[in-house]
Image 1 (tube, one colour):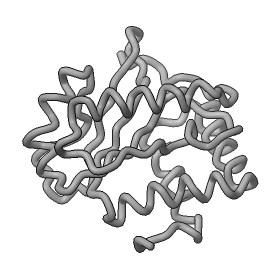
Image 2 (cartoon, one colour):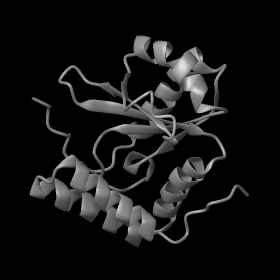
Image 3 (cartoon, rainbow, N blue to C red):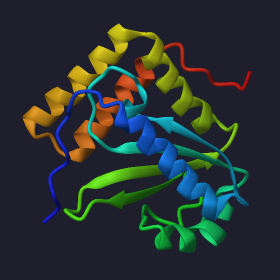
Image 4 (cartoon, rainbow, N blue to C red):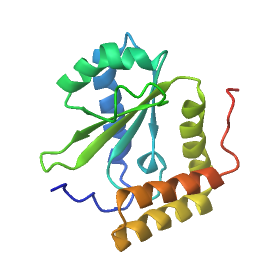
Amino acid sequence: MKPPEPDIVPYDLYWSMLYRKEKSRLLSQLAAWVLAIEHIGSTAVEGISARPVIDLLVGVRRLADVDTFCLPLLRTLGYRYVGDPQNEESEERLFIRGTPLGRASHQLYFVEKGGASWWRYLGVRDTLRRDRELATGFIELKTRYQQQGADLAAYTAAKEEFFNSIQSVPTLAV
C-alpha cells in the first residue's frame, strides 16, 4: 500500500535551506552533466503553504545523458526513477527520494536546459512568486483536492489545467 501524501503545511523557511543542501549534494556527483539546478514547486514560493516536498529542476544538455550517466549515481544518492526510460519522447525524467516512512521528500525534474519544459517550470514558479492571488488560488486548488481525497491523476490534471491558465509563462529564453 502506498503511503499517503504529506499534508499541506504553512510555509517553512527551512525549505530553502533543504533546497541548497540537496543542490550541493547533487552537484557533488553530477556536475559533469548538470548545467543548472533551480528550486521549483510550492516550497520555492515564499509565504505560501505547500506539501513539504522539495522540487528541483535540473537542467542538462541532453536527456540521454541522464539515462546513460546519471541514473546509477542518482540511485546511490537514494533516488528512484519514476517513469519509463524507454519513452524517448518524454521531455523530462522524474526522480523521487523519500523519507524512512516512504513519503517523498525530494523530487528531481530533469529537463534540457533552455527547452520549453525548462522555461515552463521557471515561468510558473516566477509567476506564483510575483502574483499572490494566483499563488493563493493554487494552494486552494491543492488543498481542495487533498481534502476530497482525489486520485493522483485527477490532481495532476487539475494542476496542469491551472498552469495552462497562467498567461505569463515565458516560452522563449530571454
